[in-house]
Length: 428
Ligand SMILES: [Fe+2]
Ligand SMILES: [Fe+2]
Image 1 (cartoon, rainbow, N blue to C red):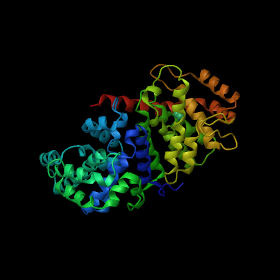
Image 2: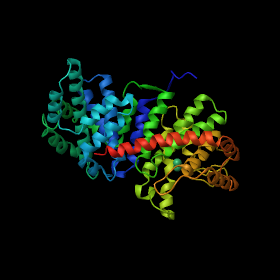
Image 3: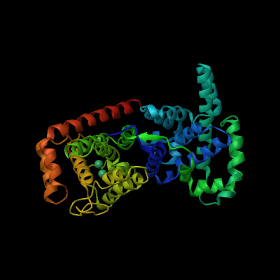
Image 4: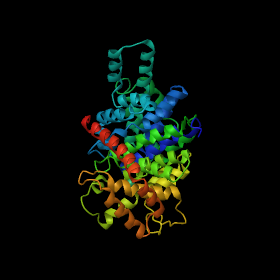
């Protein structure tokens, strides 16, 4: 396997993450893309170089990532009220990944006023090179802060161009205090171009297609980046805190045992990491409901694999991964959801994913119950074979290597659990 080759690209992955964040609340629809689009246009107007522009887009797309895991806040307005904490939580999560360190640096300060950031930089001091970098980050953070505010000021009930005057005068009030003077001036110039406002409203994701270089990502890096994304999905609730990690580990192991190629095994791990990304759409009250869901609640749950597939389909190089992740609730007898595909449409990867999902769900520890032991877990899996839902061959494979698969699942689940509790302790 040549892992030096690019498998996908950062822009594509972060675009998917931004879309997933939009699922959490309809209020948030397009907020991250709008913020990224505007911040990019303003930063570009200032003449920032390509590298800085990418940093602007990525940090803007992820500026609210901390809100995904925080306990109560859901609506955009509530998130903004708690903006400083959201920014700090988000930055801490992103620092887990080497590739995201710069993004974390920017997000950490992007909710502060320009004046506050300047003071912070002055007290820090450091080398000339560091000072230049700090100054650049302050400018980028200010572009994002400004774009964030503008996105929140936009109203749906008024033609967009009729709102420009109101928005510009509000932003001008923050010239040199709340926002960097350079960025405010650039924004005022940009605001004269009508298409910018029409893009913000209609097609902020359009930016994804014209913003220069792609930043290639190898398969191995994609495994790491999606591992990070899986924590965003899982850490919303203690009920799911270890689930995606366990599914990824068991899906990969089963893929190896089934003789899939090394590359495909890593792709299965990625699919496992992201298989429940559409669950960001499901309210926490339903995720955490003790006891059986009623029909209406279950209808909401049924949406999640549709959104998983919808989000992953657009990621470059993810065609197969989108299927494997998106079909994990399909059944061989066609009675699954939401596509009702049957055995003729479900390939090896999809069959493994369905088994890995059930296996992990029943064997992992949850706050209200212990995980099932081998005997009971196999009993449940066999019931699912008998009803025509899942593949007998895959379960046979699991049975023959039970301890090995279970150990892989357990190790990854435990690691995720540790991270989850660490993240709670640091809660600000
Ligand atoms: Fe699921
Ligand atoms: Fe799942």
